Length: 267
Length: 305
Image (cartoon, rainbow over all chains, first blue to last red; front, side, top):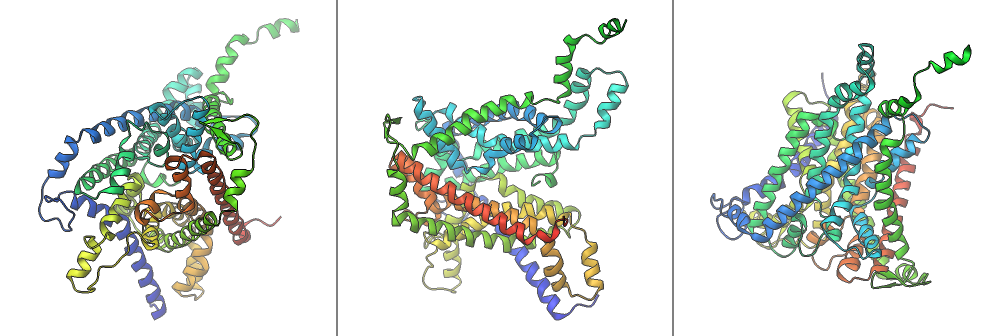
């Protein structure tokens, strides 16, 4: 097909912008990974050599490792709370036969409308009423409110796509309702539950906007610790922590790709 | 005899079990509803309420309803200056993300196989990486004389004085645009991937050029995605306090940064609550405005009544 000059320029601009945008998406992360291997004490790109020195520093840093364990514990609990509340709620939102279902959906997804900071401050103020102070428990509560919509959305999407014919077939073949539920419906939900668990875990693990307000001031989680580090220092050690976090997120990415497929994440 | 047949119906004691397994009721959502009512609604009400009472060591003093904090915030010229800065930073960053995100989403809809998957990984992996990591990357790149950008530009002789980008509005804009890019790409991806290509073919067959087809057919059809992405990215940019703090430097403040500082650093919770109310209220107003403009622009897509 012949193209006018105008069309060719248009296409070039489009491709140029797309390339710039892809470079912006991946470039900074790649630079951070590269400088984490810097052997010297300051940042250079490309790094002056290859060394795992700063990774060693991270693992020997008592404060960082404590923060890492706190984050691991908190994110695990948030994940469990969100799954326990979110999966049944998604059931009611899809299979329910009652009035006001759209209101229910809107309410279940409403934490998404709130900036993390607002959820954090609101929980902090609410706790002050009962002399309940910043703690791991408060962090788990505030983060589970923040993360609940992720579970509800992912499981709802899967439930809506299930073939009701399978449940009918199961019933026609003589299975009771309980048997149909546990052997037909639930196994089909497993991939979305795993995806929801992985997504919630990484969001809770990485969160700083809620955690700055509700986390225990003496036992900070990793993102809060990192937030203060980034504000005052820029040693390659932060690059090493960042590279580890990027690695962590890639594991979650693989889990998501294997369970619900990457295409579905933005929907 | 009719009474006998009625008695022969399935025993009623099983009906609750059946109803539960059918999942037709509201009950499975009850735990989540109660949880949200206690840990989301009640706290938000507390937050909004704290802007209108006097606090004494975290406790509400009796009968102390006051508009003092609210008027204090609304009459403070500094607050208005910071609100204005939050607003324009968010608008510019959101517009930039739109211009960068659209070509990617459009390219994605034309890719196949491994390239499609790789592009999807490039779009989604930043979403799973902490915003702190990406803000740190920008500190490293834009930072003073030792920053990677200045190192490169100085050593190649393009400039002979280091550029001052970190700790300016420019750095905040760059950081926000890059960090929120995936939020704009995803809604666009959804509408562009599912669009009906026959309209474009028709437009090309009827003699329109590719650029004209792009702007007169593709872009208008994707308006719902543009509006959704614009509203989302505006909201997250307007309320972000991490990026201005890390990339704008110690003295750079926005409305969201003020909310953080009043509650965590200054510990003036009443003023913090009043500022948070202003932040939330103005943000929702803007979202309403964006959706209203969006509905106006896409009104042709509705079925006439």
